[in-house]
Amino acid sequence: MYAMILDENLNFSWREMPNPVRKADEVLIKVHAAAVNRADLMQKDGCYASPEGWPQWCGLEAAGEVLEAPEDAAVKPGDKVCALLGGGGYSELVTAPVGMVIPVPEGMSMIEAASLPEVWATVYLNLQMEAGGMKPGDVFYMQAGASGVGLAAIQFAKQMGAEVITTIDSPEKAEFVRNLGADYVLDYRKEDVRPVIEAHPPTVALDCIGGKLMGECLRNMVFGGRWIMIATMGGAETTINLETIWRKRIKLIGSTLRSRTPEEKGAILQALHQDLWPLFSSGKLITNIHAVFPIEEAEQAHGVLRRCENIGKVVLTFK
Image (cartoon, rainbow, N blue to C red; front, side, top):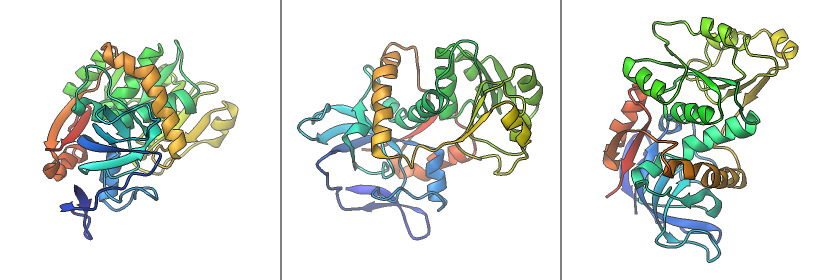
């Protein structure tokens, strides 16, 4: 097979690699499409290696056709599937534990399906499991609302009946997230989110930005609020009044998906298949594909995310 590996200088290189050898509890997939995530950018920069046992090149989610599977698996050779991966999705063939491979939602293309596992697993993990679920009357806060995770989180929160506060950086992104149901949409380059947070104290926040404003916004959480950190794109340092944490019984939760066990990831994927996939097939949930590139143009695809141009997902395709 060929794969878009990272060479000794961390540059992309389309090279012939040994075919993966399927273990007894794994599925072998011929990849048709693989989505790009910010974790891929970090891996290319040399600061976010794949977990042990996974290929040491990029790719956290993919869609394709099953070539081989255990006899008792729910998916069979020839099935169209999407998979959550620990790495290695930028290749013609991948293997994944059977629990991390689920059917493509009915009516969706391979390109659309490749954009689902990572962001929706992230959202389900953090808003349903870490935050303990959401309900009508909740106020949900997330920056980067037009990112892949942002678009998924907004839709999930609205499905649960919550109000949504989010930030963006262009009128086009603002219009898109408003159409998804976001209630308060602010351009962080021109507008200050703090007065909105103060007027509408969040019950749940999913934070991929961090930075200096994080501590100021956190102090306005409601009693018993849950603030979940998944990245620090805006900086890793802030000032938090610790008295606010214990007086308001705020839960400050650090969370990552990639380092979780295959069993944990499998449980999340099965929940997505059961609870959310029917909503995609019925059109109640959507994925937005911002751009599609052939795998040979992986560098250009990464550039779209690095420049924060995307509304939703960027996907790579294979011949």
